[in-house]
Each structure stands twice: as structure tokens, then as C-alpha cells.
Amino acid sequence: MASLLGLRTVIYPTEDLAASTAWWTNFLGLEPYFNEEFYVGFEVAGYELGLIPSEEGGDAHTYWGVDDVRAAIDQALEEGAALEEDANDVGEGIIVGAVITPDGSYVGFIENPHFGDDSPEE
Image 1 (spheres, helix red, strand yellow):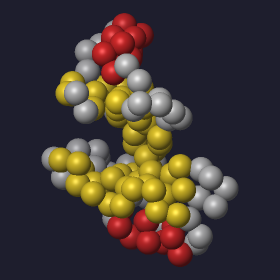
Image 2: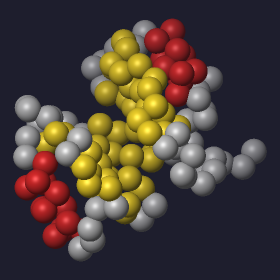
Image 3: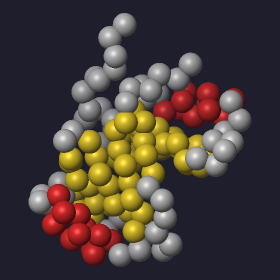
């Protein structure tokens, strides 16, 4: 069974990264901690709000914290999901991957060593 550790990240695809960055900077009242042409990241109350360039924009992508992205993907695939993004290291030890559930929902998984262990006590 996959053990979800809680929501960690929401990423908004955007057709105009600079404009979206400016909007979020003004709305949040803080500067991004990471600002590159391929990704802009804000730390908001202990969570990641990310922006990625996309030619067609699109819906937000949400990532659940897990101990093992590969295992979470494998379990989801066994339960009938389709692979959207295989597990990959995006830098600084952060591993992400995603599936599409049978009903068409995007479900992302993230291993992020920069988050504390917020898993429920047993």
C-alpha cells in the first residue's frame, strides 16, 4: 500500500512564465526562492508553489509526498493507472513522477529530502 505523507507541491503550467511570476510575487508578497527559465518556485507556509512554462497552460499538478516515488508509481500502475511521468531526479535529491488514474486525474508523487517527516504517528 502506498503511504502518502501529505500534500507537498502544486505546480501551475503557464504560457507566460514572467507574467505569472510577477502575478504570484505580487499576490503572495514574496519573491520566489528559485527563478529559472524552466521553473519558478515559491515557498508558501512550508509548501511548494511552482510555475512551469507550457505552450498550452493547463491544470495545476499536485504532488503527494511519498518515501519512494518508484514504488508509488508501480503500485498505481498495478491498480490500473497509466504512466504520465516516470520517476526522475529533478535536482538536489528531489524525485518526482506521476500517473493518470483510470478516471483521468493527474496524481503526482514527490520524494523531497528538504521536507521534514510529517508522516502520521503510528
